Image 1: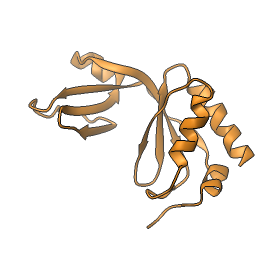
Image 2: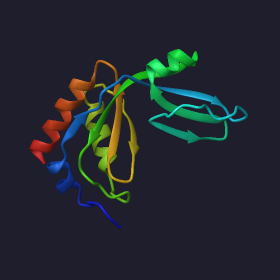
Image 3: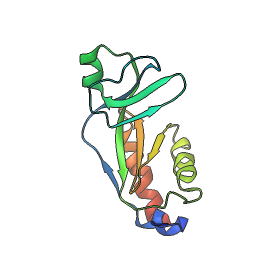
Length: 132
């Protein structure tokens, strides 16, 4: 197992970075052929394939999408087995009436926050790190 597992340690040492670009969540039916695009992420579900891609790509492809959002990357290598990290972040953001769609990669966690709320989220995350 790699990555930090102690909750207060990685909250105190995390830094949050806003990623360039406006992203969106779109889906295509399970029976549709894969798209010839390079999404930020894709996930296959029984009902269809979810794509997280630049909103401009979704617009160019004529795809319906939801949640125009910004990505915040947490620059701390948290373990994939870490307990309560995303729950703690989601709870703090919820206190500010902000939803979040978290995605964990192997090395980092990424937060998809509503467009226009990214600076609010960055402030909440900075406050969390300072008070941990």
